[in-house]
Length: 229
Image (cartoon, rainbow, N blue to C red; front, side, top):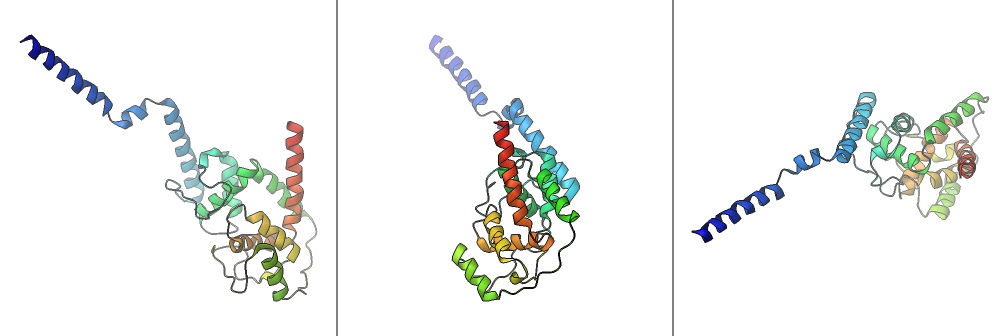
């Protein structure tokens, strides 16, 4: 009798322990304040982006492989910078999620990038518009220069990111030096140099010396960082 009682008590305890071990994981998460905070922050970002751009980032995934922010989460970045970034990057695409990915890449490198770029663009727009540059370099000259530096052939270049400001434009419309610098800069978004070329053309369509200005901006960022440290 005593042995049966001990076995019965043991069984009850085992069942109780098992019920604890297989408890609903959601209940456990609900008791984790840190996890709750992370989820609330994500939902705040999700709502803000959805309200402003009509896109849902719930299942956000990287589209371009090789970007600086690959595998990062949207909440790693300041929300205001992110919203400003999506708006700016829509010059490349009509897809808000793609614009978000591009913005994250920039903010991974420079956390206040869009505040700085906003100033860059105001300065660029305040100067007297430049006269259209007469294109003297031929396509084969551009093709060779890009192939020599980036090992890609632009002979059959086509837009891959639809909705950009330079869609349908000729590569030779833009200054070759700016274009080469632009490809180098835009590879922070993707390993594909042709995608980088396309993004560079979008920027140069709006500001012909965009990358010269961007190089000065980066030097300013480095200078600011050294002063702070």
